[in-house]
Length: 238
Ligand SMILES: [Zn+2]
Image (cartoon, rainbow, N blue to C red; front, side, top):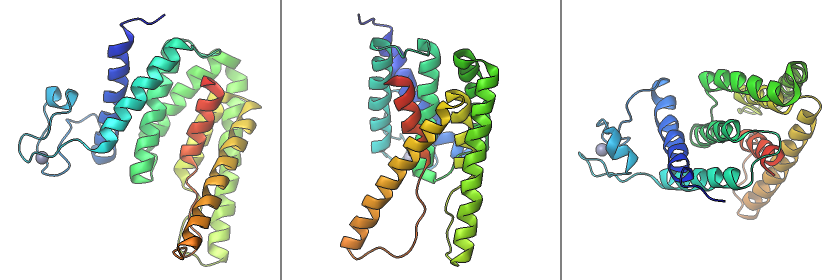
């Protein structure tokens, strides 16, 4: 059963993720989108139809198109195959939220505090509606606490070996707490395990590739946020 409502909803999800990923890292508020090349303000209508910049002619980046396509397909998917534990609207908002976290983390390697706070509110609503408030809160505390421990271990490791890098960003700790609220206790343990395994596999493949090309320098940070997001998507949508 496909409904025409899904087309505007799918487009809206992609626009929102692109818009928030453009403006939040730059201004930390819901400002007007500007052209990253010349700084001219992009009118809303131009932004919606992905029109090239009127003053310098810059076309929207490949990320804009990929985000639009992925969010459209994701929205269609949750409409056709509704998640067992979430109603459509919560699943839809969660999809947009995860999209924003993923794109900003991918492009800037940062999870903004405002985004983490919004996630805490969303995580509480989702977690409490599925498992009840106490299970959600214990899950959130476990997700935050386990990643905080990993964060301090990482700091200690980096300092002990005098490497100029961070093992784990604090944004990952916050995100893990948000995801703990959503998954609840003890499912957060499974979520973290999936994220750590995927992160480890990815890093091993990356190190192998860099060694093969004789480019591997030293210890570099494992990006956990994308894998935390993948594990939430796996638990909720599949
Ligand atoms: Zn421009």
